[in-house]
Length: 77
Image 1 (tube, rainbow, N blue to C red):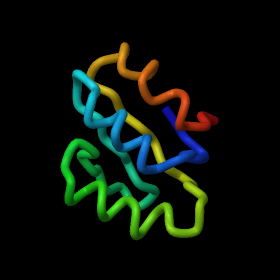
Image 2: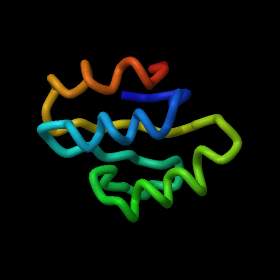
Image 3: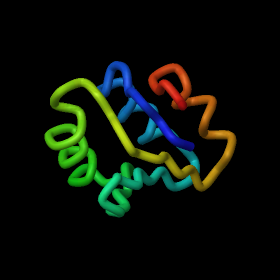
Image 4: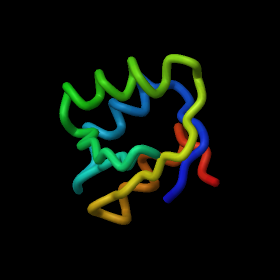
């Protein structure tokens, strides 16, 4: 799923930590970040979300039901 914005990153990552399946972010450069990893969360926050915008990023969920947990914090394209 392509995303264009993540609102409330702290609450978003709290929701990610409560997901049942894997949650990965594919960057425009082709990097795949496991968002269940604290290190990857830190990288995502400092590099991608510092200006408040997310561009060219896709979210991959291992469990399709997890989208309900993340949807309140994500603007999908």
